Image (cartoon, rainbow, N blue to C red; front, top):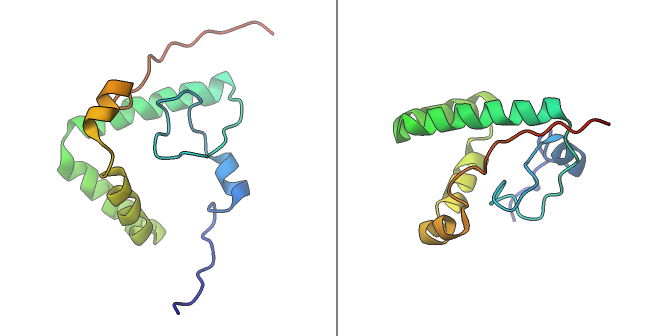
Length: 115
């Protein structure tokens, strides 16, 4: 039996709550079951910037994305977890994602509501 691994920092329930994932049906597709907290405008703007950066990186093709993931995996010593996550995301059905809008980000409209 393999030795039990200690959870890495941020992998606990408390750590997951710090991670901001959008709260509509197409955000965080593979993060099924994760609860999100209400976000303020600052978090929302940061999320929009991150989405823009991800779209730019994706537009560069698979090699830059691969290199970024390899560097992240090595820097944080989470390469195995990243490989497992990439493998799991890779099993998603592209036709189903397109049909449900899960292959693109929702409109990034920001509406400020006075408190």
